[in-house]
Image (cartoon, rainbow, N blue to C red; front, side, top):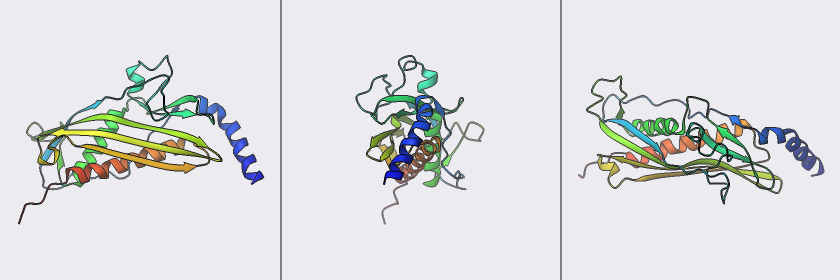
Length: 218
């Protein structure tokens, strides 16, 4: 037990500088799903990032950036997590690479979910793109955070996305929610990448379930 605690203390001291600085990670969702040969054609028109950022949130699960960055849309659009120390104090943030945004991540996840449900998701380069059924998404929540505990840290990823479109499966504007929870001893950059990737993968599956066409009555 003493050796384990000594290791944790030493590792935390070594990583202290990393926790206080900004990290840039690129999460992955796994192998992309190809369009089916047949199926209803849809297009992902808009994905609106409606998350509200604060510099001093009440809870760690609320999106936050430093006071100097909290109103910078170029940064909030890429922000996916905020590191914290053993006392829960906010430190460095975790961003997507430049050119990538949370809206693009969610658009990709929604597209993959539709494809797995049997829809053909068309892009602007595809024939009949203009005739495809438009689908919009609203990001109410997409955030990762950690909570320190005795001898461990619990890392979370949560998503809340509303889908809107003229499809029977989207009647009423369903909201897709996911949450991934992972306990670990230390949180490294690869851990942020992994848990966010797992969260996106879960979102793909939840979208698939949500938009799966209802089979016709016998």
